[in-house]
Image (tube, rainbow, N blue to C red; front, top):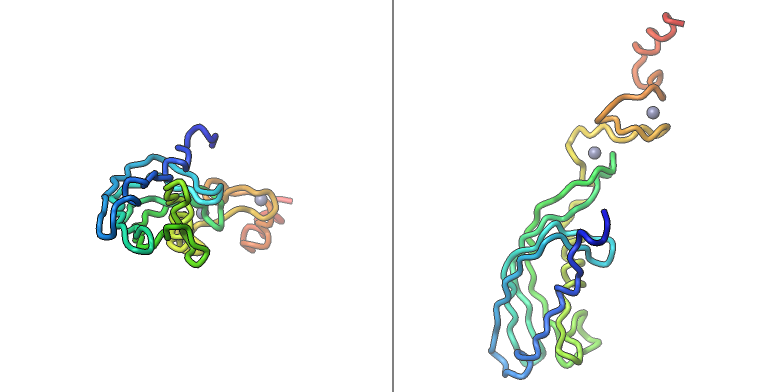
Length: 171
Ligand SMILES: [Zn+2]
Ligand SMILES: [Zn+2]
């Protein structure tokens, strides 16, 4: 898929200078409704919706929200794309001023970049070894044929002895 079909992850960079100048206790809700996104080349979200609450406190800005998305991955057997619907529950402090002691910070120019946090959460939310369907037949190791779509002649002898006998009879 070409890059033009994704929105740029810069849409996840929020300028929150207005909140930084306000004191602890102020908050702002941001409505997210984004189309397909790619995060750092290895995580793809089909869409992202929900409300992100940003609350100013003495250490920075707390980001909280339940965001709905669909994570795009591939079946570990046949490599066809599969999407996993998930709800990401975020609750993370973005320190301000930026601090090396917390994993996330608001930068000096007042930008809060949600992309790295979302990427982390998305990776944690995807089940390992996801299959397109429970009985996915996978790819033929010899010719690469997707065995869900068609069969091939490679290794048929090893797989089904009855087929092997039929073939011998034909020869
Ligand atoms: Zn599959
Ligand atoms: Zn084959």
